Length: 356
Image (cartoon, rainbow, N blue to C red):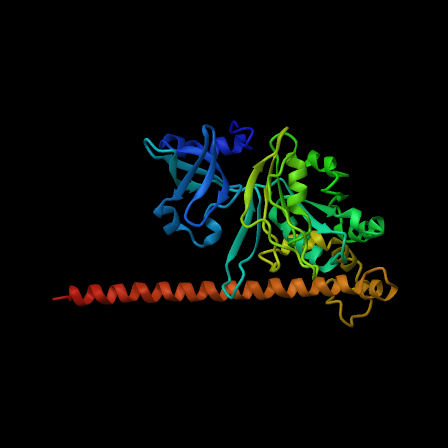
């Protein structure tokens, strides 16, 4: 494929110029492995390692290349390999807080135009989890689309689709069947030309089956859902796939844990109805508690606003606030460590070169 078919743009051409002058070549990250990454280049696929300088200057894992990233690499003479020297700026970035105690960003996919949030209709659609996905999707800079799969295993897919539309806001909602292809062609419009899509969702919702239908062959392995109803992890790593007829698609492993990351703007987009209600409150600083003239409380009392949706909005707000506090605390600790390290260096230098 040409770079343009991989999603190259005029913005990237301008940004890449200093790297071109330095003798580097452009490539797009197709897959991540433990000690190397696979790249799509104008000359074909190659494997590459990360330059030590790139690792050293990264402030955190989020600065290192991920699937969908555009990079500048140095080819190794006589080998079909290279060394990635730099990561180009991202047009979009779907992230979550990394799993575990550390307050770090985990970038799931980069430079995505459309983010397909996939949920299955064969069980109860979890509106609270969809709201979380949509908030992160809006924050990423990509346009979210809700894809509801396994319609053939649902007695009333229309009713469940309407319930999903009630929380999707302006995000389009499509009911699809990856097994027989019903509704799948409607998703191709989001991949037209050289646009990039990414599929995110829990294990077992049918992402791989949907991707295979779009690809026209078994690009990803699939498996049946377990007897307890929980999904199986058939996708074990993120990968950028080329779709026949144009476009690219990133498949991601199912995510059981999806913690917020720097998502205030995305939260406002995902819960715009609640924010709009807040503008009708009597007081501009209304906390939606016991204040008189609170439009949010009035909407809750009348049933216009779902109590579970409002409770989840509050929960996600608190989660983001806690994350911000953790990040501030981490920044203070890192600054303190840097100050101590500098002081120790000065003390060592003074001992070695005392003033006469």
